[in-house]
Length: 375
Image 1 (cartoon, rainbow, N blue to C red):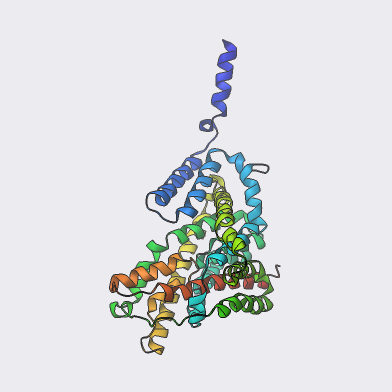
Image 2 (image 1 turned 90 degrees about the vertical axis):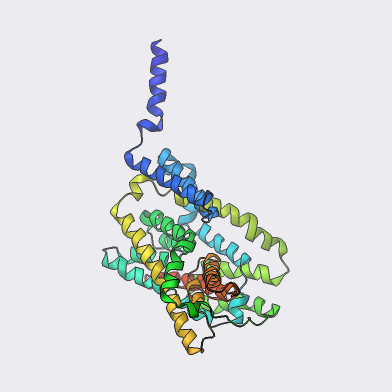
C-alpha cells in the first residue's frame, strides 16, 4: 500500500501543476488567445498556429526548449540564420515582381515605409537598449518576421529574439487590423477613390533579368544582404526561368511549409514566462507597434506626395503596402480602396511597393550588419 501511495505522490509531483509558476499560466492563456485569433478569426493561421502552439508547449514543459530538447534544435536553425534564409527562398518562388518592374516608382514607396525601422532604432536607443539590440528591435517596423530573426541572430541578440520574433509575426498577422485606421486617417475619400492606370505588360526576359540584376547591384553594395536578398532572388529566378519547375514547386510549397512549422514552433517556444514577462519585452512590443504604425504612415504620406507630383495618378493607399508583409499589406490597400469605390482595383498596383518593401527591409538589415562590422 505504501508503494502505491509513494508512486502516486511521485506521479503527482511530476505533473506540471506542481512545477509551473503564475507566469506560465499567463502565457498559456496568451497562447490560447493567439490560437483563437488564428483559427476562429483567420488571422494568418499559417504563422499564428505554430507560434502559439510552441508558446503553449514551452510553458507547460519548459525543458522542451532547454539544450537537448526538441525545440532547442529547431531554435538553433534560427540562430544560424538558416530558417529565415529558406523562408526568403520560398517567398521568392511565390512572388511576382512584375508590378514592381512595370512601375519602378514603387521602389520609392517601399523605401518610404522603412522609415518605421529607423524610428524604432532611435526609440530603442532612447529607452536604454544597446545599439545592437536597438537595431534588432527596429526591424519589427518592417513587419518582417524572418528578417527580424535573422538580424537578431547575426547581432548576437538571442536573449531578446523571442519577443522580437513574436512581436514581428504578431504585427504581420494583424496588418488588416492595424493599417486601415491609419490609412483612413491620413487620406481623404477623394484620394482613396483614385483609380490608377493599368500596368504595362512585363516581358519574360525582364522577369528573368530582374532577380539577377538586383542580386548583383544590392549584394555588391551591401554584401551582408546576400543570405536574404540572394535567397529571395534565387527563388524568384526558379519561378521566372520556367526551366526548374520541380525546384519552384518544392521551394514554394513543401519546403516552405516545413520551414514555417520549424520556424513558428521554435519562435513560439522562446516565449517562456521567465523570458517573456518582463519590462524589456513590453518595451519591445510597444516599440514594434509604434514602428509599424510609423512605417505605414510614412508610406501613405509619401504616396500622397507622389499623388500631388503626378497630378492625381497615384492612389496614396498603395504606400501603406510598402511594409514587407506580403501579400497581406497589398490586400489591405485593395480592401480600403474598394470600400471607397467598389470598382477600384488597387491590388496589383499595391504589390509593387509590397515586394519592394521585402527588399527594403533586407537591405536595412544588411545596413545594420555593415554598421556593426558583422558578416
